[in-house]
Length: 95
Image (cartoon, rainbow, N blue to C red; front, side):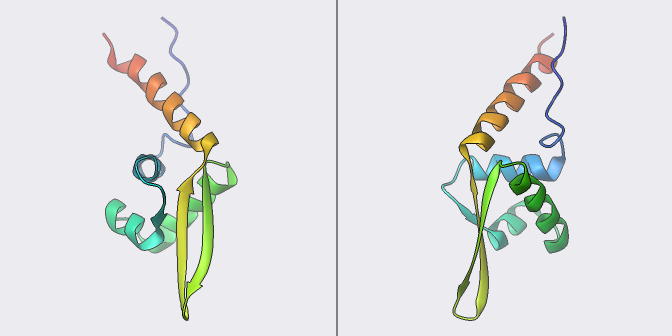
């Protein structure tokens, strides 16, 4: 049997955690994602940027008063990539 190559962008533990979180919600704020993934702010920022550059998520930056607010949302391309990744990963789990 020929195994499919897993999407290297999603094969990172933190990026996979981000995508797993975003696929189950309409959108999520940076602080919430940071808390749920236990990532540092710096590392999370870098990983969100990689996912955004790939078109897997949309990052919106705004202000609530004087406080910055970053919100992330999975895109249709991201949903497709995530579902494909999960399907491809399942072939590794079958005997």
